[in-house]
Length: 536
Image (cartoon, rainbow, N blue to C red):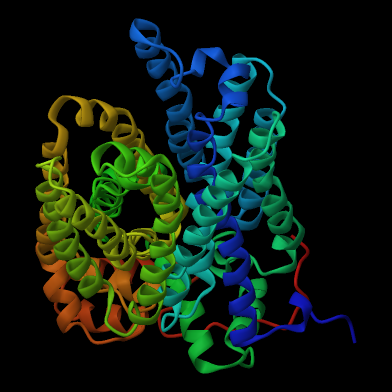
């Protein structure tokens, strides 16, 4: 008997292991979001990089330095979009595990270059690499998790990423707060190398866990996919439900076997472009919720807008990140029980109210009671954001994407998220300066719009296999149909759906005839001889 794969883990235990390693990868993303931007106030940092000195410089020089600082720091978010876009094709060439491994390596090189920088040029190059690597990580991890998870727990696993996102931010901000009392350049260099440790953990264990079965089927390695899914589901390889799911994956791939990346911009029988737009818009609303106004500029928000002391602002900023953990715990326990739509709708409504509260409380800077109430609304906002818009948009994008283009669609959606992240990071200082408290009203409007958009256009996906979600869009004929179709469509295998619909839908009938002319049969269960897992 050979050694059992995946440390001998099966079923629920193996799912937990995949989830745990994915969460470490998410911590890398969260930590990198907060680390460097919050080090610019360290005297040893701005003495090393005088071009980034916005603390002791004055007048025109301060304005010039602020522009450079904003550009250097936001380079990370801009390149994150390119890193995510790179996964649109690399993810399907290399597989999910190799893409994550390479992305961790690239971000680690970026961290090392940042921590050892003595010139601004090296620091900028480091930010570029950091963005590319982190963008690849966040775009691929959610896909890997979604494609290996069961339908009943897929939402819980992906939504709970927010817990570790919160832990990453808490680690970064409290470490930076502690290092602010340390003399010498170690005070800012050490916090920049921490993500390397997290990256090594991911790289060390990623190949000890299974590859995505859906990617393996796409690559013609169905024997491996069957064996992996039997271990993931803790059932025998001949299990009827397992065989049906493998068949559904093959059918979905056969329907779209001639589809290219450019097909993302065409409707087709499965309404692919419609699904790309849904994935992209929900990621846009994630960033346009106003969360990055709070996360990126939390110290400025508490100190300048809400009039707390420097020490109080620092403690409040670091404590704020605990709300991500609280909100994400709520999301992880409710996203599969209540569904994606209720969480997003509730979150959007609450964020609208909270942003209105922040705007109202900061409109009169001479009212200390109102300003303290404003701090409450900031904490409440971040908690509500985490319930419906931290992990759920990444989950939703991976669910609505068709199997043959899942890496590509998630890459595009994540790139959109990074681009709007960049936009918010760039315009927020200008917004605070030019329109003050009215800037928060922008996010009152965007959050209200998010709720309306979700209500009319986003179908419920909870409890359905990824192939069943394909059925929702195959049966829809307009952008308004998926919500009602999802409510009425019974849960069934793709093969059963195709056979039923072919009787009265010419479009589906043509698909069935096309499939029956291939090597994949709608009626034949998928059977494969036992084989050992290939090393990949």
